[in-house]
Image (cartoon, rainbow, N blue to C red; front, side, top):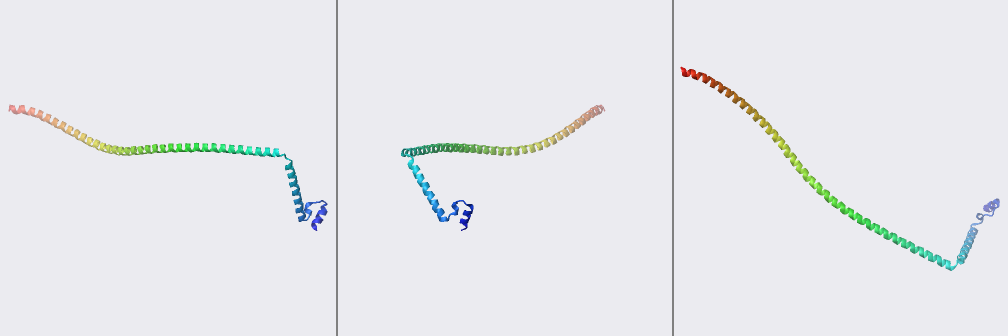
Amino acid sequence: MERVLLCAASQQPHQSCLPFPMQVQGAHLRLRQAQAQHLQEVRLVPQDRVAELHRLLSLQGEQARRRLDAQREEHEKQLKATEERVEEAEMILKSMEMLLQEKVDKLKEQFEKNTKSDLLLKELYVENAHLVRALQATEEKQRGAEKQSRLLEEKVRALNKLVGRIAPAALSV
């Protein structure tokens, strides 16, 4: 009752003012009319046009399939080329790792040799220091011996002079 009053108040024929079953019935009627109109329009399209459209659609589908096949083949080629480059890079990497390991081994060996040489060199420095001290002591002893020898030589000369003076006097007596 309120709906009818509202519709009457607006004074406009409005679909929402109708009861629901009538709205559904009206919607079905409009749907049937639209379907009938569509069917008439489809019947008006000539059959050769429909066949042409089907042919074009098939042609476009075939072209799309060929493009997809070509793209797939190209993608497979690129994938294969990439796999080959990866394999090549892996081989290069392995050979570089082997070369680096050889270098590391050589450097370790050289380091061990250098360590041994360093130890020997330190031992030589220590031994050299001992020898220098021994040489200095020997030179000091030699200087002492030379000084002693000079003193003895001076005493011998002095004694020779004394004997040379005493001997003629002793012989004359």
